[in-house]
Structures are given as structure tokens and as C-alpha cells.
Length: 60
Figure: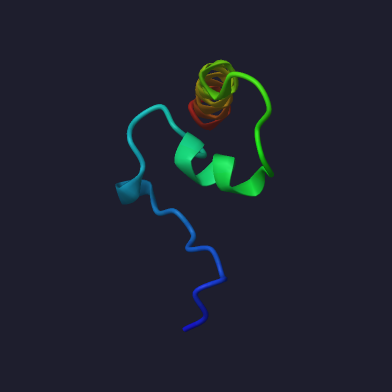
């Protein structure tokens, strides 16, 4: 198995309200210049909004 290939998330491995965890998303970035906590906070807000939006469509 190639270690460079990212492992796909399963629903069991994700906490409620998360589509793409920050730990996974942050690996896609190069060096973060500035306060990484601000970026993390904003990413988590955006991710939670995406989660709610997707659930809204599923439950229609």
C-alpha cells in the first residue's frame, strides 16, 4: 500500500458536524504565515456550515 495515497474518511471516523477535519485539510497547505488558529477557526466554521447544508438537502 502506498503511504502517499490519502485514506478516505468513513462516516465512523468523523466526529458529528464535520465533513473534512482540520487535521486533514491543513496537510494540503504549504507553510501558513500568520496565525494558524485563525485559519483553523474559520475552516471549522465553514466546514460546519457545509455539514448543515448537506444535511438540509438530505432531509428534504
